[in-house]
Image (cartoon, rainbow, N blue to C red; front, side, top):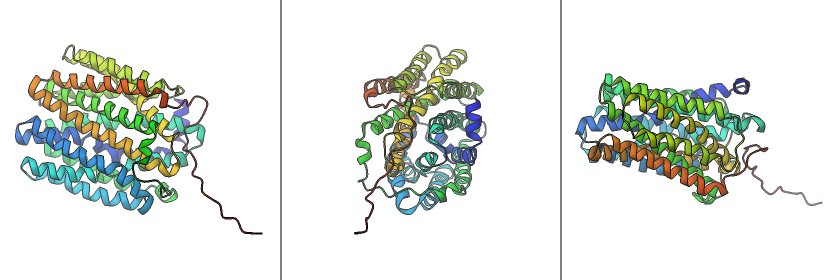
Length: 402
């Protein structure tokens, strides 16, 4: 903990972590908020799944595209434009009754204008700390990120079920705008300039390490989203147990991230951490009562933040600085699609097989995530004894003739 405390004393680090987490908080809220709201409006989890799938398609397009645009237009301009449009689209879903096809169109607009906060901040981090501090910073950020992916749904569940689904969505809009403005005010956005990449869009995905991180992140967050939908389904509307279980899930992830964040990253690190997630989630489906779910999901949570820290570090160490924003855009897209599709698949299985179907989905996502990490270990760099800084960009230097 002393190393994390020292890291947070670095000028600007604590502030920018807090600002970007606040701005990205809706990423962990909107999938579940949309699921609850559309189901409440239509009476079908399947219809809600269609809206989430449409949103995920927009997010898939947005991630690398808007990240790439930051190297052309600058971070502040791209984030401001996308934040405004996204807030309007999300608000429309909350306050305007629509047929399902129109919900899908507006959901797509919300997805394609998701602000590229994550690629921006991941690109900024290496310029804020020295090389020895970068890997611990990724670990700290991954631990804090669990507030988004796990604690976010706790707040969404409470507000949506106790007050109303409209307010659950509108609360996400408040975080989107408030956190976005806070992040945009950070001086680091003016100091760090993302170089224009000289590669074609998507070429960075040909790097096996980036592809591994994208696929594994997609499966990991998909598993978490399915768990969240399953927990809500088990305890039903008005059940305080859902919030308690999801909070314990979050605590497990925070404990894992802060406890294991200092461990050097080996090629086996990602597979080991994904195996912990799989074991906990697979065991959860055995008994759907509050005590069993609390125990098994705490175990599953222990692997989540450490796995995310590995994803961030291996991507950073494997690409040039000019490609980091796009690389993290693809990784972020994978996570956002995972959140949407995990909820969508869980929703369909809940409709057809009951609450346990969501836990089957989560176990399946987690198993595939472990297998991807296991098979892809050859492409996971060995960071023991080396830092995770991006590869410097080089270009020809003009020489005056003598």
